[in-house]
Image (cartoon, rainbow, N blue to C red; front, side, top):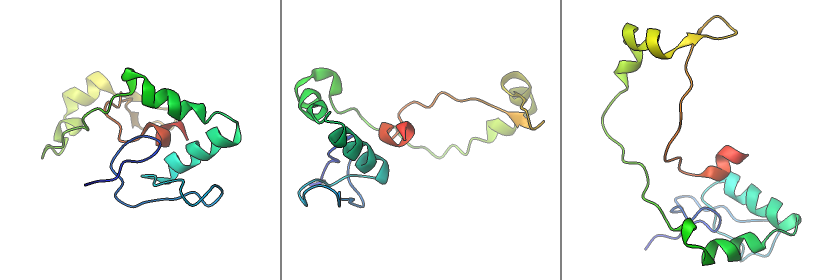
Length: 109
């Protein structure tokens, strides 16, 4: 049985534990979740976890499905012309909407 991260509820592959709080604080899936957890607790906002546990909007969601697509379409000239623009550096630039991120704490940090 896998152990969920205390902050984001994702499966913990390599566990991180808080050195600043009691030894029972953890496990965390990444340093980002551990950092956000420590910030919330230092600022007196640990009630977040009680609210999260009791509100249905925080139900565990399925992770993104991986496939063998190597994203070769990103090199297609028609695709590049339609979806890229010249960035400040003069290089082709694209912006992406990232759906299904493993851990929002990492993005927040």
